[in-house]
Image 1: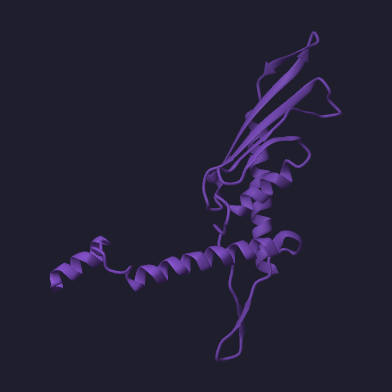
Image 2: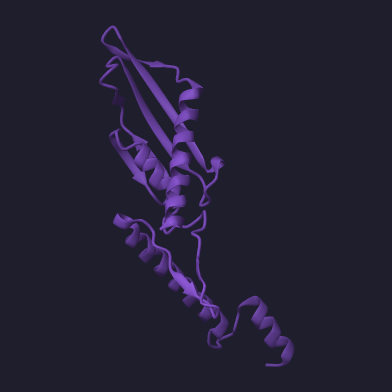
Length: 179
């Protein structure tokens, strides 16, 4: 193989029967190690919050690594996912899909207002902790003549719920930084 064929082989990723280049193997191994480390980090957070490693540099001043706003070993932002589940914990859940970022509740009737019920679908759209990474769809029904009938949902209700989830996600991230 001449020099131009070797360069073409490196850029195209085709090795024509030659062993896998070391650089690709190292990148693959690094990705596996990173995914494993992330999974262990989240598993360790289950009951105790995130603890951050301290690194001692040559000047012996400890520094911390701040958790990124997009830490995840699931398909979506872990802070938004956790905040959504915490916020909706009072409602019965029909479906949760952490890879797709979808939470669907069953109908919830407030005991103080038995003639009104709500059902929510929360969708997390991104791996970043951003306001536009969260979408909530709400359905509301009222009891009329012994039958549940569709009723409008106030936009302020959905906006308030989004604000609560986003605030909680930011608090979870802030707590992760503090620990």
